[in-house]
Image 1 (cartoon, rainbow, N blue to C red):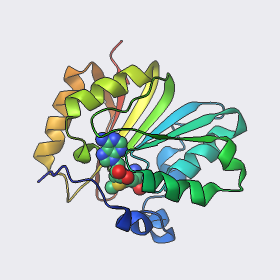
Image 2 (spheres, helix red, strand yellow):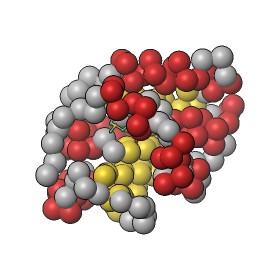
Image 3 (cartoon, helix red, strand yellow):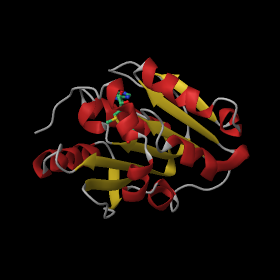
Image 4 (cartoon, protein in one colour):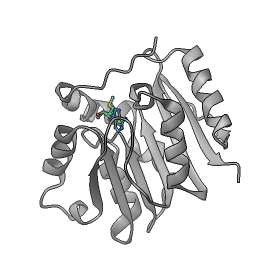
Length: 184
Ligand SMILES: C[S@@+](CC[C@H](N)C(=O)[O-])C[C@H]1O[C@@H](n2cnc3c(N)ncnc32)[C@H](O)[C@@H]1O
């Protein structure tokens, strides 16, 4: 069953810890998609478990836009990177529930464990399409137990109808995941 409840700030620490790093190693998950100097976006970044690795991968000539609708999640991330060189690379952006309220041309977009929380996936993927370069890639990962196979099939239908091609279905432990590229 999908539900549209937004993940509470109380879960920030359980999303951002060393044990998770063993099961979901951000370098292994993202390393093939992100290069130095890229502009990348972490949508629904939460406490920034993936954001900091994205920043290390793009390096000081790249940028990461970390988007979340909850100010407290963005504050958690800002506290984590305060005083480090990552502060120069990561831009935080608070959006609203119904719109990302951003314009950009990104090389790569991550939406990890967040799509099931958005109120309208059609609107969401339309916005994602407007933010990604023609040759850019979008990695969507959903939690296996929280998002049924049926719901994920629905997401796949939506992205196909929005002009995305599914170019990969990476194997990730306890996850359902797809990599998207614009059809043209
Ligand atoms: C389960 S957490 C995952 C956080 C992070 N991606 C991770 O894997 O650690 C989902 C995050 O998505 C954010 N979120 C939910 N709906 C959103 C929306 N419509 N736009 C932006 N962020 C959203 C929530 O505030 C929350 O921080």
